[in-house]
Each structure stands twice: as C-alpha cells, then as structure tokens.
Amino acid sequence: MSRVYLIRHGQAGTRHHYDTLSELGRRQARLLGEYFAGQGFQFQAAFCGGMERQKQTAAQVAAAYAEAGLDFPEMQTHDAWREFDLDHIYRAMAPQLCDDDEEFKVEYGVMREQARASESAEVHRRWTPCDRKIVEAWLHAKYPYDGESWAAFQSRVATAPMAGQEANIAVFTSATPTAIWAGRALDIHDARALRIAGVLHNTSITVLRVRGDEIQLFSMNEIPHLTRPEWRTHR
Image (tube, rainbow, N blue to C red; front, side, top):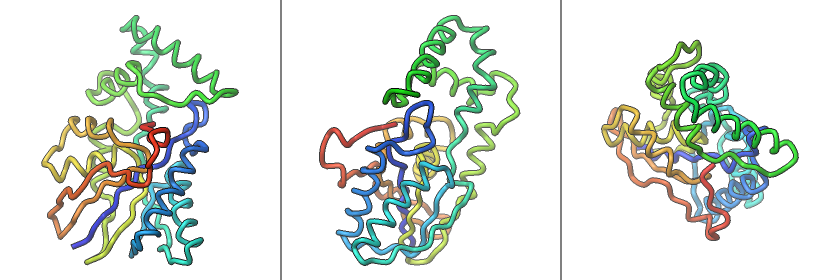
C-alpha cells in the first residue's frame, strides 16, 4: 500500500502575479519541509504539477531536507497535477457573462481594479462571488470555450501518477486536483468535489492510501506545521 501525500502549494502572490509564492507562501512551504524532516518522513518518490507556485513549494521542502542532512527524491513533473487555468476561463467567458449579468459586470470591474492595485500593493487573491460565477459558468459549459472543460480537467487529473508499492509519495499540487482525488476516495465524481477545494489551507497535507484501484482517504487538510493563526491562509 502506498501513502500519497497531496500537498497544496503555499500562499500565492497577488492577482497580478498569482503563479508565484508570496513571502508568506515561501515560509509556509519551508515550515512544512522542516516539519516533515523533523518527523523523519522518508519519501520514495515526489511529483509536481509544474506550475511555478507548485514548483516553488516543492523547492522549499527539498531545501529543508537538505539543511537537515536528509535525502529528498528527485522531483518528477507531471501535467496531471496542474490546476485548471482560471485566468484563461476569465478571458474567454467574462465578456459574455458581463453581457448577461449586470451584477457580475460590477463585481468583475471591482476585481480588475484590485488586480491593478496589486502591481504596487499586497492584494492577495480571495475567492469572490465573481470567481464563483465564472467557475460555475465553466462547470456547466454555459458559453463556448476552447480551453480545457471541467470534464477534460477531471480526466486529466485522473491520469496522475501514484507509482510505488509500500512507498511514501509526495505530490505538490493545488486545491482542485487534491479535491478531485479526495472526492474519488469518497465516491464523489462530480462538481461537489469543489466544496472540498474551498476549505483547503495553503501547504495543507491530504493523505491517500492507495492499493491497486482501491483509494482510501486517510486524512485531509492537515496543517501541523502552521502553529500560528496568521500563517494559515486559503489562497
């Protein structure tokens, strides 16, 4: 039986520079690495989705292992662990949703102002009503979209590697891939999995036990390394 440790990336940067870790995000990731190393966790394989915030989280954990004089496996990048492309969905669907929903149009204008402000201020991405509406439009294919659909995204995540027998496997990913796999363990295969994604802390640990086609959710959203309230974030 393999134990798969699904690790959400640390706090991301501002809306203008979202695919990178904030200063707090780097600290969260280093604290996670120090926790793992301090507990003597040994990983036999490590995977990463390839997004900058995922790779930077993995790098901080690996660095903590190196500082402790411990080995950490070579990182293997796999596209299945990437998050869906929310920015692309916005570019494609927001103009159409603005035409149909005046409230969304106002919310979207406010969000764009925040994004512009983030070029010179620490305005971090928060989940807004605007975000919920655009994701729902994508989930239900409300408008034509030439990017990855919800169904295609789920299928991609399902191809994610979890190789190894009797191995501890570290996976550096994002909230929605983690939620999809936790949902599969609970026999949830639809959009309800997004409810799980919404509660996951940055650098949280979700543990699956995998034996063949059998998946068990052993624990979810653990943050033993984030001992101070100000270190706990969701975006």
